[in-house]
Amino acid sequence: MARDYYETLGVSRNAEQDEIKRAYRKLARKYHPDVNKDAGAEETFKEVSRAYEVLSEPEMRGRYDRFGEAGVGGAAAGTGGFQDFQDMGGFADIFESFFNGFSGQPGQQRRRGPLRGDDLRLNLKLDFKEAIFGGEKEIRISHLETCNTCTGSGAKPGTRPRTCSTCNGAGQVRRATRTPFGIFNQVSACPTCNGSGEVVEDRCESCGGSGQQQTAKKLKITVPAGVENGTRLRVSGEGDAGKRNGQPGDLYVYLVVNDDLQFKRDGINILSELKVSYLQAILGCELDIETVDGKVAMQVPAGTQPNTVLSLEGRGVPRLGNPVSRGKHLITVKVDIPTRLKADERELLTKLAEVRGDSVGKGKKDGFLGGLFNG
Image (cartoon, rainbow, N blue to C red; front, side):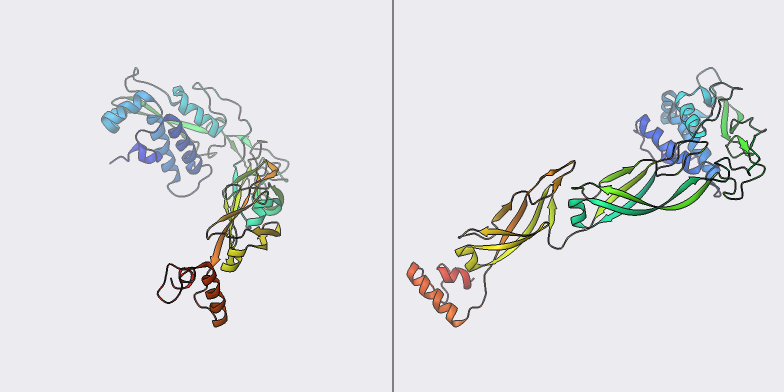
């Protein structure tokens, strides 16, 4: 039984054309025989191409949705008995960008142009304060660079690749299959040149004929102040090298911010907790508070209630892109009420309760001491 075309591309049956196109691009690059030598890759590439050919054309997609594979047995059913892959605008566009030289009419060829290199991704871990204040970080990457020996041609110095005689440099060959619905033309990578359009007879010894070499290097990048977990930084031109003098791809650095035992973050505000004794909460005090900037003196007002939130202005996270402006450091006060008292402490507090007129004692939970210690 033929596999469902939507399942082949990994999209839902109500997927938009842009989504289908993106899915095809991704899979075509992954399974194309020119870059994937695994067993079955070429067959998967053909299945992906067939699925896109059908789903990218509204009329064919409609027939497929109604009748399944039987409704699209030929590439041009219902359009006069013949339609070439090249006449299908969306498919031709993607094929052309992938092979960088696919012609618009049979028998014509378009000069093969530069091919941009792939983008790379790197995860970079940051400590909590590094994300707050930013700074310079050194990273190590491994990417493809153009071979210096052959300058990217893949051919041994003093030689040059020749145009593939099988596909005449197009990089593709086409096979026509007659079906009850018409003629189906299938385009696939040239088996002689693996889709490159050229044949390297004397390979460069440095790169083995690929024209590129895997190289490790160190980079210094600047992390802006105020970045969050998941922030993406783009480093232009540090991805894989392009082919045929194409531009290199970019490096995308994804930031992973470690948690902190003392501080938490809420947008541009920093959150922490402060434990004070019940006497400090009642009488008030001045304490040195730990912030991301170091210790800062802060006044705890007399009569502070449990879970009161005190604020330190300008001690939070710098705004991304405007580090002069910073959020707040919000401190939640936790009052430490003792469960046991020494005899002299109880005596003093009992006298205080008598002065206040509070009823205290064993079993009395509505008085001053009862509320503190008998709960």
